[in-house]
Each structure stands twice: as structure tokens, then as C-alpha cells.
Image 1 (cartoon, rainbow, N blue to C red):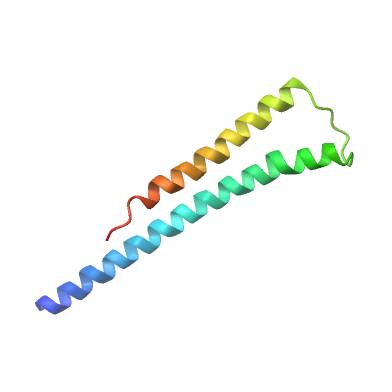
Image 2 (image 1 turned 180 degrees about the vertical axis):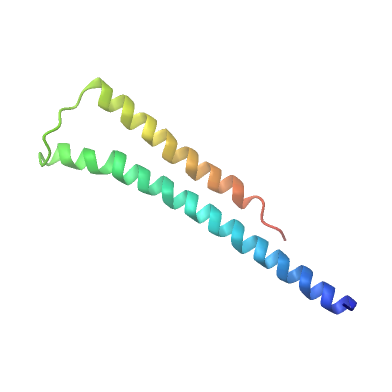
Length: 87
């Protein structure tokens, strides 16, 4: 390979790395949003509109808090992964 081919190859590999990094960060962020929506938003809406047969107890608040922390942690992990993008 000549110099120009190596330069193109390096640029292509950088682009591939960046796209894979973005894809991973997007997947983690989407998982965090899905966890928040299914573990926090849906049960809260069910309780507010009395569509479910659930009672709010101390255990529910703790579980909701843990799921919320997991969703936030996944979002922050996705942000950290985006820091690995190449320029």
C-alpha cells in the first residue's frame, strides 16, 4: 500500500471506530430511558389514574429509586463512552 492508501485506511478505521462508539452509547442511553419508562413512569401513571391494583408502600419507593439510579447510571455511562470518540 502506498502512503495515500494508508491514510485513507486510517481515516476509514477512525470513522468506523466513531460510529461503533456512537452506536454503543446510543444503545446504553436507550436502555436507560426504557428502564426509566417501564420501572418509574408506567407504575406512577397506573397509580395516578387508578388503573392498577397496586398500593404505594415504602418498598415501592425504594425499588423505584434503585431503578431510577440504574437508568441514570446507564445514561452517564453512555456519556463517558462518547468521550472515546476520535478526532
